Image (cartoon, rainbow, N blue to C red):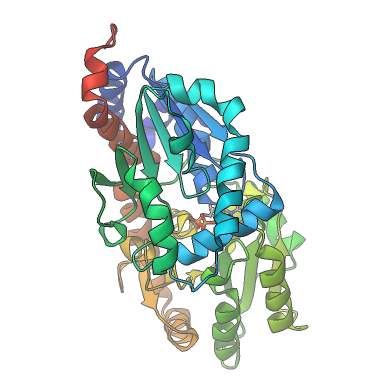
Length: 412
Ligand code: UDP
């Protein structure tokens, strides 16, 4: 449950909230619909949860709709996702037809809201085709890509691009992801909610209870990576790094993750992880339900160092979450992790398990470095990656995109 806007004053200051309310007044009554393909699991669902509520509080008529799919559809959209992130994947014309058909099957339910909206924000490729199906739409449509499409597998981008080109604008998390497109492109990095169950302060007893529940030894450092079991998150590479460190330091590793309903690959990645972990009692592979926000919060607080050794990453909310808890992050030198991990200041960027092991060993021998980087990391998130900055950029984008529509609205 999102806290009311006023609750953030102690974290971001009154001026920031005043500015948001001013923007909200200008957009009062504007109808915005967000569409993605899962209500829980993964970063997009995390964001849409609070974004919708806070926009409502600011006077925007925001809503959040889900495109429902079936396992076959999500196999295909996962392949599209992997292709956009650079993997060589085979997607047949029959697959694209299924992709279109599932979008069409959602239309009757979604059409009234989508066609009435002043602004529709479509998140990621799964629901992107809806634009072509809504022929009586009145508002502007924006495609919001949350993934790293800096080096897409060309055949996949070639098929998706004509769909994306139909949008009035697109939004990417960082400049490297932008593509040649015939419309304005906005850069909006994501953010976290510091008052959510995932990020709010916890009392020591609750953190301790989680430590005991998962059998972590209080006298030894803990490395933590929280992620869906996804190959791009490189959990097996994390185990390799841990093993290199383990030879010289008595560390423990927590790999915690769950699935997202729109991600069918998790099971096979988890099998690979279990095999790589073997029967090492100091590797804790935790399969958590989507509601385990406080457990994740506690695990991030129990961490000595947070890892996010992704080989592709749209942004990496888990990095932000770890930094907000005052932890240094050792992250893959890719995508949105580069926006957050400032090498040697908020953590370290690495490219290999060896690199990760090297940096883990360094930090384990320099508690002062852990403390300094952790403190810098928290302030860096406060300045750049909290929800108030994020919502301000969305409201700005709406003001720019809806200029002409606004002129026709009576109450703005
Ligand atoms: N997450 C979760 N449970 C899990 C794994 C991840 O709640 O088992 C959350 C995690 O805390 C973060 C989000 O899902 O808030 C993942 O976002 P990120 O941008 O790191 O990666 P994505 O899954 O979107 O690729």
